[in-house]
Amino acid sequence: MRCPYCSSEDTKVVNSRPSDEGAAIRRRRECPNCQRRFTTYERAQFEALMVRKRSGRHEAFDADKLLGKLRIAANKRPVSEKVLREFAYGFEDEVQGPEVTSEYIGRRVLQFLKSLDDVAYIRYLSVYRDFDSVDRFIEEIRQLDADVAGKHAPRGSAPAEERADAAGEERQAPAAPADGAVEARPEPDVPADAAGTRGNLTRPEPS
Image (tube, rainbow, N blue to C red; front, side, top):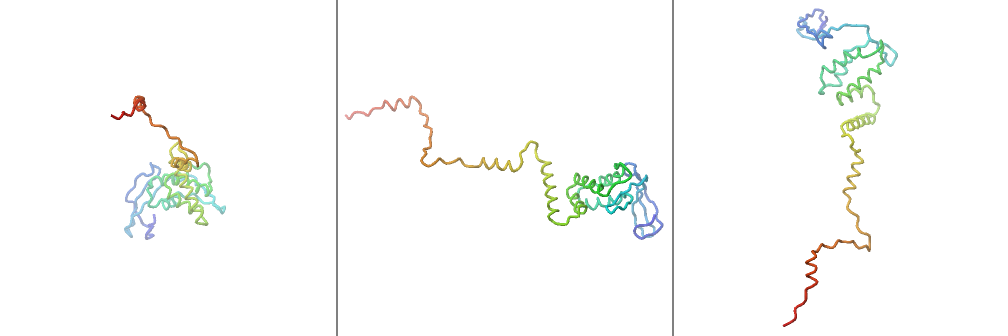
């Protein structure tokens, strides 16, 4: 195999081991000319899945190309390389039929990334949707925030607007009495014995 660094035709395999649960063979190669190493993968190739582009042109599905786009979207994000590889190299197996549209691939990738990482999803979406304005991009982010907030809201909880209204009603002060009205105040409780004693008191006669 040709060296991807110096284009030398002579490279040698220094290590081989199974990969992707036995679906591929990972080979570590070294170039004697520039002394650099690189990795290749050997996979079984069946009837190629064809992709119909928006222009109407057809091309063979390339899992490595899809994986490269996923890596760019998930760059420096807490996303496992294994998860990206499993999706890219397993995509061809989940498609029923010899042909798929590029739009379907894009929508399927968006579904995958949205369930995996929000930042990676927005990165890929910005390229896939080709936003023509900042407002449309911001609106998409707001919609994503709303979806995330609804996903984590407790079951049976009222919407935020209703909770705010209810809290405002509880904080309202009691209404003042109307002009001219006398506010009724309860009389203090007085023990019966004490009341009778006050009624029987007489002023002493002067001596």
